Length: 196
Image (cartoon, rainbow, N blue to C red; front, side, top):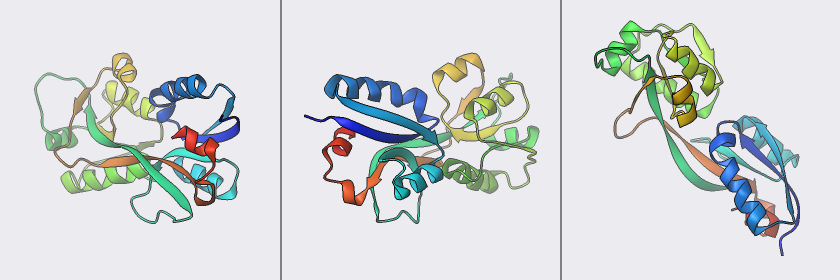
């Protein structure tokens, strides 16, 4: 029987998509397990895991420099897309970057850095005056015609509320690896193992 308390960190974008079905499954399988949630950015959650403030987390895994003191379990890779205002015609990516400013997804994040590398390759002269951490805020700005952006695929509810054009970025788009992380010394802990 799995019971007790576990402190789970989760990045904000996963709270709407991954967290509800995960919590429903945990409650069904382990009704005596008390999951305490903490939201945050990947870097802060990884630091909290190292310090013992939380027991495990769902984060965007760094492409390099992942520490061996933490056990990384890949969950899925989340590709980035380009979003643009809805407009007549079918402009390509380069044309959109010539017409609109680039609304940057926070470049201190893993997905934001990957998106910035992509934009620098395809539109090195693009103008940008706005950088935001919130995917909903970026989608809202783009929906109002204030620019274009490269970011992880927005959730359907956002696209319903703020209509934008969504374009895929080829066979190898910028992306982020979403992973479950726990401290190595707790790999045998039944409570942590139950979350996987």
